Amino acid sequence: MNSEKTTLSKKAEILEKQKKYLWPNHLLYYTEPLPLERGDGLHVWDVDGKKYLDFFGGILTTSVGHNRPEVTEAVREQAEKLIHSSTLYPNEAHVNLAEKMAEITPGKLQVSYFTPSGTDADETAVFLAQTYTGHQEIIALRHGYSGRSAIGMSLTGQHTWRIGGTHFMGIKHAINPYCYRCPLKMTYPSCGVACAGDVEDVVKTMTSGRIAAFIAEPIQGVGGFITPPPEYFKMVQEVVKHYGGLFIADEVQTGFGRTGDKWFGIEHYGVEPDIMTMAKSIANGFPLANTITTPEIAESTRNAGLTISTFGGNPVSCAASLATIGVLEKEATPQHVAMLGRQLRSGLERLQEKYAVIGDVRGMGLMHGLELVKDRQSKEPSPDATKQLFEATRELGLLIGKGGLYGNVIRISPPMTATEEDVAIALDLLDKAFAKVR
Image (cartoon, rainbow, N blue to C red; front, side, top):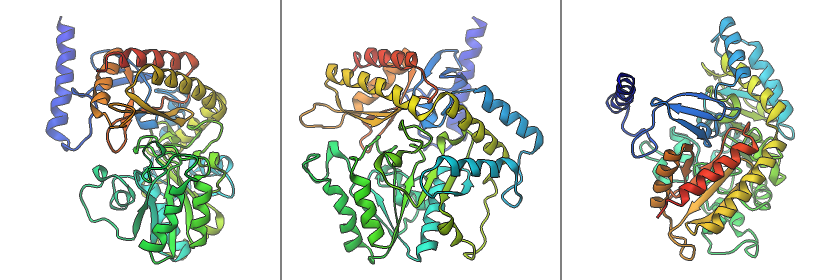
């Protein structure tokens, strides 16, 4: 009895301190927020000791599972040698990670700049494109997401994530390839991927006609795992090149094999980006991001003024990243992710057949979304169903994510070290949870 009282008091204390000492705009899941205490593999435990199967991975970040021994040991070894130095001094983990990035990224991408977050990486990419081209204007996509800084919010194409601050006027938004809710009221493939043509229209009507870059996520993450048609990015790249811009692939959520078969999401589309950004899965939860480009483009920064990242290339985060990639290469390859992705997709489509509230199933690999609707004919979003499903999955011991402009998309993205058994259990729990949605 005393133990139960102590546990309950601990939970109440955490929630009270959260309310008292942290900004009220922190987005917290569930009607009653869920304080987590520890994790191991694909599972986490809350302060009450309840166990959950984690199928959101800290927003696609815990790429090789919680408390992964190889990562923990690499961090311990590095922390005992050197925790911090800044980018003013070379360190072995930093340069070794840069070498590894050149090995696994596509095309001519070879030269890296490491920063602490995906927001930093996207801002660095914008700065780089403007420096190299001499142009200033950027084309982004509606429903996209690029972080919480001023430039990040300006790139973002959802009003709910653009609160506060002055937004940069040189950033314009084209319509996105949202096939389920096509803004042009057309149907793929008879549409001819008309949404790609809007990029050129935006350049012609809303810019000087000389752009610095086009930036897009291969699959829009916060936007609700919106997945473009296979032809889309090749068509857009031609437009971008014609108007003097660079192609920036934002792989913050899609990178490191998450989409299956390939190390990076943009590779599915047969497009070689000029700049690529990445974060989240890069270091299994340690703060790290990267902006990688070609030697030619990187050279343009040589005389562009001074720059430094105090926490960029942090030795501990870089060591964690090298260990994380090592685990991915050993037991969670893009091929492994593709295999599990097929199992997951098949199971989700069976749930769609069973439950009318599921309007759309989309995604790749271990990055799949379910768009929930009031009815399939009208496609009216159902954020209420999302809330109900969240409470039901919490009760059943399954953690999932959500997103989308309308708050009605379930995001499923477990650590990539998941097994067939893990996927089968998650699908069973989802089935039981959907049965409770009214």
